[in-house]
Image (cartoon, rainbow, N blue to C red; front, side):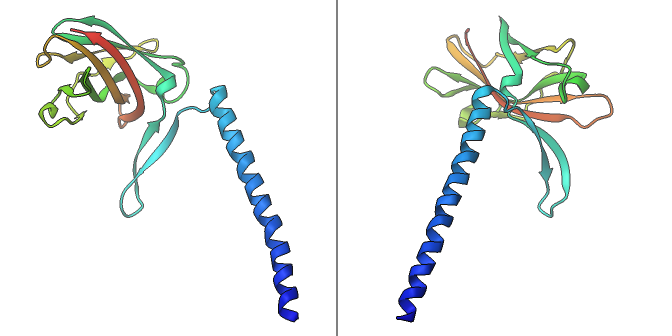
Length: 182
């Protein structure tokens, strides 16, 4: 009889705890969803950590809604204009130059059409592109199109880089897409 009473008390104690945990989780998820819907969720800084725990650098992530990308000219090069929507806030206020670190040009079938690893179907990573001067929140970057035949393509930029004199370049992550016809 003693065991039955203990079992009943344990069940009566655990059930309210599970309900309380579920309610707290619901309130937290609703708060994050509300922030995302209101546009208050912005980019953030993240440390680059080495295997032994040492911080070796910093990146800026989720900057998709903070920078606008537009293709302005298509010849043998693709001229892309980046506009920082609020150039007075960090990290953009500190940058002198701005450029593309990682991009992919894909055709309508989703196959990679250009870049140093185009034959392997991989994104173009760390390809040397000229950095552009950032002034009043605007920078114009050019991408060579010599290996891209005529057709309809999508430029997908996933990493940008900003730098200032005497500072380490800052990698900026996000997803920016623009469709163009060559």
